[in-house]
Image (cartoon, rainbow, N blue to C red; front, side, top):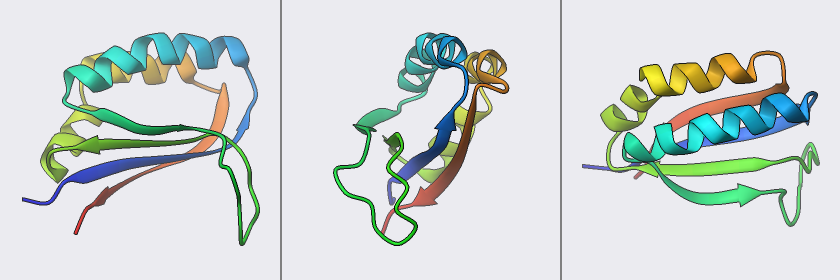
Length: 96
């Protein structure tokens, strides 16, 4: 079964307090759902659109696990804490 990944790219962080609150809740929620953080940083280089903002890559054992993690009550609480604090794009993709 292929692994799956959350790929989160930030366009901007508008409220650092909300981002911090999200981080405190999201990290344990994602890890409890089987997620493993692969990368969490500002890109070393950015091409095409050239956006050098925070990027996060999280690995899950399957697409089903990745989708389920997003729907857990613990992660929903993290999203509520983040509401309006960032502009980002979260995609869930299946590995090869």
